[in-house]
Image (cartoon, rainbow over all chains, first blue to last red; front, top):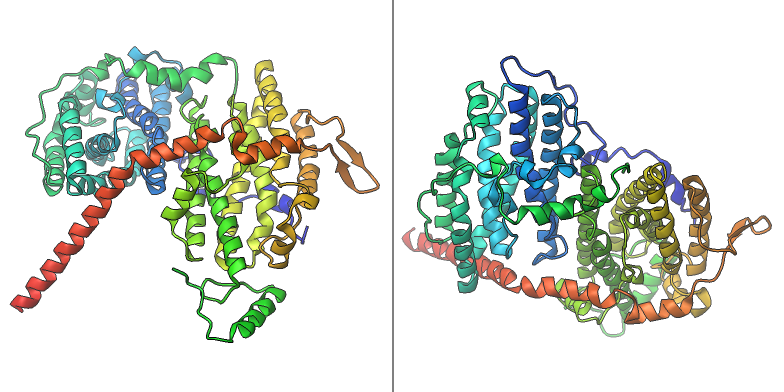
Length: 292
Length: 330
């Protein structure tokens, strides 16, 4: 066939694996990182903390995947898929760390596929309904600003694995926030209709923000050991960022964050989470003995 | 708008001679070069249908991202579907160098005025389909596309180089999933065989009708925008797939499949060309749904695109005002 050898392309080793999405299984993102539990850090606490951060990312990624083949432009499908991939990568490492820290040796899939909704530790905003594109943008703006503020500090965590995951995640999250900001500006300061949609999205999302800054006892204990960040510590920074973006986007300032209480971090969820997990876990649960 | 160079009166013959010489010498035609109108039209059709195929092709596998049974498989599948969107984008960009507009091509797709690869009008029923699509459908696409890396049209050829590299990666991943599933439970092996049974014949149809019924082949080959005939490529694909199926431990659903030592190729049965024509003409199991989904996304997103346009215009106006003010106060 005109001298083309298809086999060559298939069997040769590809040296370009670095350009493949993080976490597709060809490189070890934690190579060389000491996985010993740091002194004074309780393994059970660290495992729960890793689930909190991991579940936020996993559940948010699961929501974002819905936009692939359903976004306003192909470029948005590529961008949102990319963000979901980053979050999925973070979730996998954090859940694997949870299984090391609690001594059970459970892997990422044991956490993702074999826990019940009440065992998930994500905040309610991550599981909230997808809504329209404005809702997706505002949710991403809030969650990425919050997570970026956390990860920037967690890069100095006393737990070397959490520190490595956070250091890697900072660049990813900075991009997620930049993407959300660019769309918040376009929608807020675009047409009267898009302004209205964006303002409505802010009004819908804002009541869910209080929970992001409420400290669970696990977070407080680990923060005292230098392994976690007390979420209350990032409250002001995140508020400043969001206020600046919303003002620039000509959207009404939503005021201070509401007072929130710990809910998702305790495993108490809205009715939205169970069907989301049902879809995520369906095939794995139908074939409990299978390997993939 | 056309980017083809305008010929002065009476100069067409000289341009045509130059074009013919380039084709004969296997050199590339670039967007600013003169080209016959029929060559340009034929390429627009080929490249835009290819772009549409990438975009519609996101759906059968995209349906499984949310339910992928491990996080690693979820990441692999999401990255793959994202690559397909990327391929669509390069190909629309290559088509735009021929003087067409992406928005117009999108309209042709969602109004059903332009076709895409009919393989994507079949449903993906189980997670094994993800592996079989990677192995057979991407495998067939690679057979079709590797020769196009030497298409006479430069932008298309260059887009194909990158696309083929990514497609071969996808094929490896699909095949690797199937190997893993075949080592798994009885239920998993049955899923794989069922998926192979459903996708084998449609994969053979991806090479198009038999050469005797392919009216455009001769001209496209003369122009070197197609490099091999449909039947040659189909044979190549069968020869490549049989040993892979044996290694996997699945049976290809063709009783006529047998090695022919005299020809040095596998003999194989005839695909159902009646079904092929039905699917191409829009009566496949999923044609309406695939187009409806893309159209719904486009229509729902109209207000978002309008907002982006309005915002860009406001920013441009503000930048202009700033410049005017600076000049007035200078």
